[in-house]
Amino acid sequence: MPSSSPLSPSSVKDSKKNRKVKSTQEKVTNKRKEDQEQNEADTNTTTTNSQQNQPNTNSIEKLSISPLKRNQHDQTIETLDTPNAQPSKTHALPFEQLKRAVGHNLPCFLIDFDNNIAPRQLQSAIIACDMIQDHFIKNKLSINDFSVASFIGHRLKLGVNNMADYSKLIRTDKWPSTINGKKVSIVKPKFVPECFTLVVRYVPRQVSIGLVTEEIKRSISSADNFKQIIYSFNRPTNDYRFTVADLTEFEGALKFGRLYIANRFHPITQYLLWYITMFSIWTESPLS
Image 1 (tube, rainbow, N blue to C red):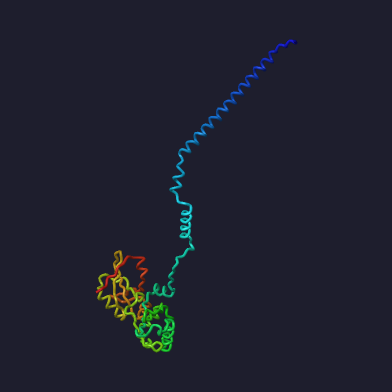
Image 2 (cartoon, rainbow, N blue to C red):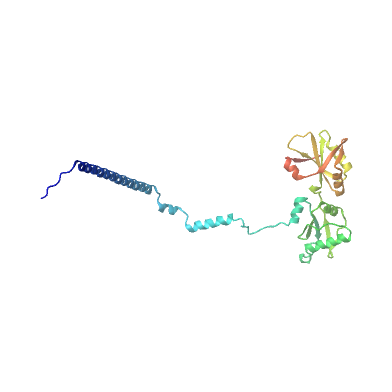
């Protein structure tokens, strides 16, 4: 047998070095395996805890709304929130009637027919208006078209939307006595509308109510219904409102712009309800 050659010192050193490197690599590999196993254990523990903390899905399904009911509920909300959704019934107010009511609040005139006349024998409101307009034209009374025309039983209700036409119809005696051969009677408003109201301003407090009324009636004979405007704050003077039935006097007083009371001229303006409401809290007390 051949004899083995003895190892040199350098070979012994290299061998020891290789064993140390292998040992170190094995330690690192083992450490990595331990870390990986620890991570897997932690993950399993977390998953178990989360499953334990989750509520019972069966009980939730019992308490929750069924899909069909939820869909119906969503459709209902969507229908209500849709901007184009409109109510089934709409009540439109003609613009002319709204203009008359908001602009001047003028009362209507009533044409009474005989109650013994059958409703089918009465002319329609439109045809009756045309007949009345033709009658006024023949009698040289010029007014604009009526803004309100409707039958209430055997009564024809007529309205206008401006103060000039209203004043003409109040003062005239040229109303027709018959319409299409049927006798009628005219019922005129028995009060002066709010829009025919003037206000005299800055009257000293020491001036009596009687003197204010007397002085105004000397200038405006149709003045009536004197009332004091009471403000929510103290003022050194008083304001008084009153109605004027005659449109000529009403417009003349506004053009003149002032009235002579207690040796002084006081400004006069048209009564504006929205102005009083916006800038003061007021009540009215009739003057004796």
